[in-house]
Length: 541
Image 1 (tube, rainbow, N blue to C red):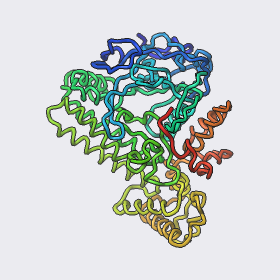
Image 2 (cartoon, one colour; image 1 turned 180 degrees about the vertical axis):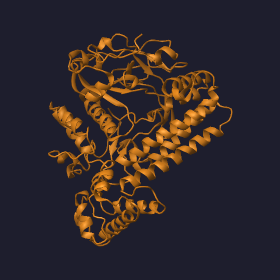
Image 3 (tube, rainbow, N blue to C red; image 1 turned 60 degrees about the vertical axis):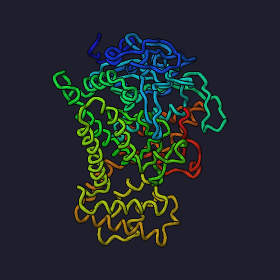
Image 4 (tube, rainbow, N blue to C red; image 1 turned 180 degrees about the horizontal axis):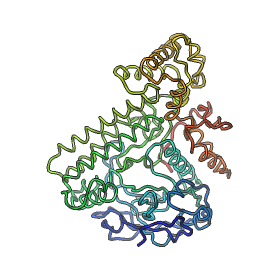
C-alpha cells in the first residue's frame, strides 16, 4: 500500500490508493445491482458501468495539481476512460455509500449513492487523503428505479460551480473533470410528462470525504448502534484526528466535541453562501457534508435579484423551504436531526444541545463580521443590525442585482458633501429598472446610502483606497450566474464547449477586474428571466 504520492503521477495505474473507507468499515455482503435495502453496512462494492465513447471536455488544472497528476495524463484517452467509468485503475476499490436522510423535512429512509460511485481514496502530498467519486457512473444498489446516469447540462453546472465556489473562498467539494460519455440519457426536465434523450456526462468529484449527515441518521433510525458507533469512530479518526481519537477517550465523550466542530464548520459555510448569494436549492440532510463542505450541486442557483424568498428548485416552488433567506435556519434543523442520531451514543444529551446552540451563535458572529467587511465598516458595532435590515429592504424596493450592488458599493462616495445623485450614479448598473428610481423608491435607497456613508465616516474604513481593497476582497465581480451556466450548456449541447472552458478560466479570479470579460459580470438579461435553467431548475439530471 502506497502512502506517499510521487511528484507527478504519469499513469493512472500509479495513483496511490489507500482505501480506508472500504478497508475499515463493514461492506454489504451482497455484490450485485439488485436494488435493495442494505443493512449493517456502510457501503456496497460496485464498479462503474462502461460508457460508449468517453471524451474529456474539461479538467481543472488546480485539482489535477492537488492530486499530483501530470498534465499529460489529464490530456490522455485513458484519463477520459477512467473518469467516465469505463476503466477502473489499479488499486481502486469502487463503492457506493449507504445513507439515509430527511428530504423536504420528511424522513425518506435509505437513499444512498444512486448514481455516484467512488473509485476510492488516494493520498496526496498537500491535501492528505482525497476521495475520487464519479457522478453519473451508472446504477448501484441504491438507484431504486433510476439509471445511475447524469446528463451534460447538470454535469456542466456541477463541474463549473464546484470550482467557482472554491475560488470564491467557499468550503466545497472540488471537480477534477467533466467527461462526455457518448451515451444518451432520457430525462423529463420539468417532470411534466415530456421526457427526451440528452447527452450524458460524468463529473469526477474530489473531497477528503463524502460522508453526510444522513450517513449517521440511517443506522440510528434502524437502532443499529454498533454500525453507528463504527461510522462515528472512523470519521473522527480519519477526518477529525486532531480531536484525539487514540482509543484513550471514550467515544461518548468525543461525540459532543466532534458535533460542535461539525456545527462550527457548517456555520462558516452557510455564512459564505449568504455572502456570495448562493442558494443550494435542496438542503436535505443527505446533502450536508460532515466536513462542512458545500456538496451535491443539483438545483442550485445564484441570487441575482435580491429576494430572500427565492428558491431555484421547481420541486420546492410551493413550500419554498430552501429559499435563500431560510438557509441558516434549515441547516440548524438539519443539525438537530444529526444530533438526534448521535444521541444514541451518549448518556447525557445536554452537551449535544449546547453544541447545537453554538451553531446559531457561530453563524450570528460570522454573519455580522462578514457584513461589516462587505460594507466597509471594519468591526461590527451596536446599531449595525438595524442598518443591515434597512439595506435589505432598500434592495427590494426596486429590483436590484445583489452581486453588482455590493461590488459597486465600494465606489460610492462617502464624503458628507456628496449628493444623492453622486451616490446613486455609482450603483446605476445594479438596478434592473432604473426608471423606478424615483419618488419613494429613490428616497428609500438614497436614505440608506446616506446612513451607510455616515457609518463609514464614524467608525469604518475611511481611507477610500483601503476600503475599496477590503470590500472588493469579499464582494466578487464574477459568479456563475444562472444564465451564464445555461449559455455554456446550450453551446456544449450544440457541440461548442469553448464557453465551458472560458467560464472555468474567468471564475478562477472572481474578485479581480478582468478587462475584456465584462460581459461575464453583467446582470441577468431579460430573456433569462423565466427560462428553464436560468430562473428555476428541477432535480432531474
